Image (cartoon, rainbow, N blue to C red; front, top):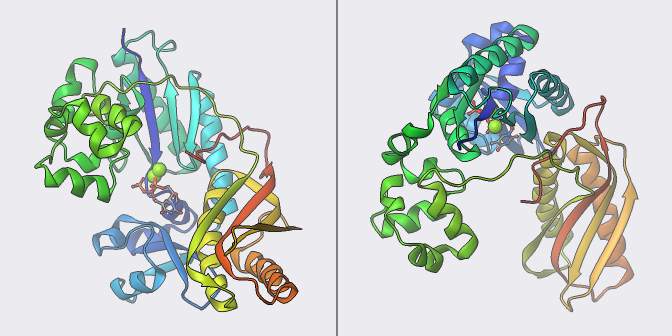
Length: 363
Ligand code: TTP
Ligand code: MG
Ligand code: MG
């Protein structure tokens, strides 16, 4: 028996929120960026509207690179993360009000197991999706794309295939033909590395991938990922959709190019880590009241320091706190060499509101 799964993804979310707030932006390329504060232009693009995308601007691109692609009438907007999170919560509440089991996948994505509420009827699921899209648009001015399929992976790919403002249902008997000719990179979980590895074996489309034996995939990817690719390429990877538990902490640690006690070098690494972790934290719907520095020394000792922070503190404020900690460590031990460095956000609280936001973290 097939399930009925809806995957909802907001279209160019952060940038579209800005367009709704200021409709004159709709005629111009828009890039919403997270500025780290280190230099005037350090930071990355987090969302671009379609006019900016046409010029090659993409999420994750350094702001400097985006500026080179954008003409004079383009608008670069500093991300207002807590504002987008508020919108996100409102949207999730709207989606939740339709019933079904809802899992928040990220700040702009939700997956809904609607099997019971539509009584396994795909035609009813299409009506449900239309109603969701209409309500979200009426109440927030935002468009989203909805994919429907027998499992989360197929539903997500259906949503990706109909962006922007689309609705695509892949009925269970259409799954093989929907997947067959798509490039392997369209399968969630296949990044640039997996794509080029598969290309070495002439595997370009999902039907090429579905021809590979499980043993062969295991040699290339290890057993867990191999099993996923084996099933997902056939449209058969299926897992129950459940609500997630909120995280206790979010952390990330990276290895430095060399053992060092050079403050500049250490702070550059920390800036990268903070940028990534901060976006992840904010987009997950939580604020941290505590930040920790994690340093692993050249002698493999772990040293940590912690401080209370203002919930929602910006990257440059966090970096000042962390820099003080690093300086203290270096001053305390003049032989200290640092091998790995990272941060940990803890004492997490929901940003605002009553809704429990589930999080896509640590997977
Ligand atoms: P996405 O859904 O990946 O992107 P999007 O909504 O901007 O565009 P699309 O229409 O293709 O869905 O991510 C949702 C939001 O998460 C996005 O608006 C901004 C944020 N984000 C980042 O901050 N950094 C990133 O690298 C990505 C991919 C997203
Ligand atoms: Mg989106
Ligand atoms: Mg998304």
